[in-house]
Each structure stands twice: as C-alpha cells, then as structure tokens.
View 1 (cartoon, one colour):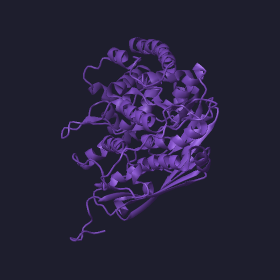
View 2 (spheres, one colour):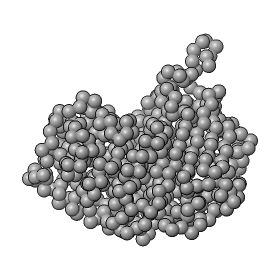
View 3 (cartoon, helix red, strand yellow):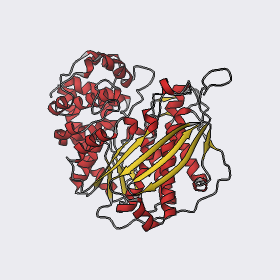
Length: 480
C-alpha cells in the first residue's frame, strides 16, 4: 500500500465493520482497516446465544452483539483512520447516542495515543453514513438470579481486595474472568486469574476467551502505515459490553469492578490541548458513569455497573490487603510478561507498595526475593512515579504522593536499594498530610447502590483506622 510517491501512507483512511455472527457459545466479528482484514472471536463458557435468542428474540441479540462488536473494533483507531464504515445490515443500530458514547471513549482512551503520536486534533473516525436515527430502547428484563453480583476479576491486588471485602460482608457473588489478547495468549491469562478466583468464595466461574488477529500484528515490521506504532484497546469498556450476554443469561444485576479513585487522575495535562491525558480513563468514575447510564437507559434498565473500590485510594487498598497477605502470591498485575516481569512500571509500583504495607514473606515469595530498587530497568520508572520527571508512567498505578508515601514507609521498615536515593530528591514531602489524603474514605463519590454502598464505606473506614496507626508508628519509630 504505497502512495503515488512510493511511500507508505502515514495513517489509515477507513475503519470498517464487515459482519457479526453469533451462535452457540461464540460471537465472531469481522472488521477491516482499509484493506487489512482482521477478526475477533469471543468464546463464552456459560452463554448460549441461540438460547438468548429464544428468550429475548434475535433482534435483541443482534443489538447486544452490535454493541460488543463496535467496542471491540475500536482498537482499529490505533491505525489513525478518519472514517467509520458500518454495513447496511447493521447501520440502523448506530444511534446518535451510541455514536456519541463510542466517540467519547475513543477521544478519552486514545488521548495517550494521540499525545504519543503528536495528533492533538485527531478525533477518531466519523461514520460515512449521516442518516443516524434514534434506536428504541430495548428495556431487556433480567431473569431471576441465584446471586445479583458478578465480580470482574482481572487477577490483581484490586480484584483480591474486592473479593475479600465481599467475603467479609457475607455478600454472595459469582466471578468473571475476561482474558483479552492485547495482553498475550489467552489460556495462560485465564489460568492465572483462576488461581486467584480459587482463593475466593465465588459461587460460580464465568469466563470469556477473546481471540483477535490484530493484537498479534507487529506494527513496526508489517503495518503499511509508517506512523502507527502500536495497537491500543479500550478493554474496560469492551469487557463491559462483552459481559452483557452473561448478565442476560444468569440474571446478574450488579456488575462489580475493582477500580480505585486514582484512576480518576491523569498522567499529565497536555499543554497543546489543555486536556488531562489519563492512561486509566476507561476505569475512571466518569467513564463508569457514562457507560453505566447508557446501558440502563438503552439496553438493560435493571443493570448496575460500578466499582466497589471507587471510595478509596491505592494506599488504603494496599493497607487493607494485610488481612489477606497469604493470598498475595495468587495475584498478578504485570501487563508485559505475566505474572510479573519485575522490570516495568506496574511491577515496580506494586512491589514498592507491597513492601511498604504488607508482611515481607509473601511479597518476597511473589517476587522471588528480588529487590526491584536495584534493577537498572526500573530506575526511570521510579523517578517518574516519584514526580521527578515530566510525567508519571503510562500505566495503571497510583498518584505521585502515594508512591512517595510508599518509599517513606518502606525505608522506615529497612528497605534499601539504588532507587531509594530518589526519595531524597523530593522537595519537602509531608507523609502525615499524605496519610490524611490517601487514607480518607469518600462516602459520596461513587456509584455503588445502597445498601451495599454504605456497607463498603463502613468496611473501609474500619480499615483506615488501622492503616493510619500502622503508618504513623512506622514514621515515628521506624519499627517493622
């Protein structure tokens, strides 16, 4: 695909949805970027699409499938297309409201991509057909359920705490493992997630296996577009829509995520546009509200979508894990080489916070007794996390002062290493003020329905009291 001058084009022109098919346990999506053809297959263990069609009608299943497909193919935005083509068979389902939601997700999730590609004015692909019409709300009714709660488990420390909290409160739930091929081979991901689920009281396991030919593509070597450097996926919004067939089959009314308040804060303010570039926007309270409200108003009125960790910051999350530190080795968080590569910002951040807040035995077991402060690959990551560079790493991590607090607490416990010296470059850090801010529990800034919301707030307020005593004693005495 060369232009008349014999050069590769900078970016693509059109992102196209080719077709959607469903039946039995599988939903298949065909899509293209210009003439490059891709396919995405979602396999379900506890859903039969033919049974769903018998219960709700084929048109309703088509509508759900279209939403899933639209949010799966948005990874094609990573090629920089300016147009969106929806075939005649499906274009009537692209309502103005759905397009607005999709374009908002693209604009906010791809802010990092635009920043790294220096495309401040790029707004994503616009539909080629302009005769968009409102689609009448489906108002699908959920069947009776053995439990209302479906716990999204990615296998990390946030998922671990969510399950522990639900177990402590005696709140029944079932689990969902969603493996996205953007993170590598799917089967090993499911195995790792199951390792954590098996330590919980989940009443039933649900799994979605997602296979996508685009995520195996080496853009630098094979892409015909010279400027597209990597494939980005909005996996959190995509996983929400992919879960709707499970809710419709099993009657779950509460889709429970484990996204903390730090997801609401971006990595930097882009001077060119003035916007907050947030690697975690898809996990933010803003995104949660937009997505949840759309589903209630247009698809399933009874469905609640919310994060049980939204009232708290990472510092209190790590502190609360002290009660279940024996389960830490079953959790994983790395997005580079699962379970832990030990040489990326995510691994470095989780490790230093573990060292600050948890007993060191299970932490050393998890990280093979490796001191990540001494690894050369982590030096820049730690500097960025401590606020000593231009911006924080583009990863799912906490805020700058949470990392600074972790360094102070870990050093008080006797931790040392090459990167520990960076904390001395931080100007006048007030650890007690950081405790006041990051151990606080917000009683209102969340979307958890009552009475569950009140119970979760009470749980965390109890955790905060113990965390403050632990941290203040460390700061004042240096005791382990």
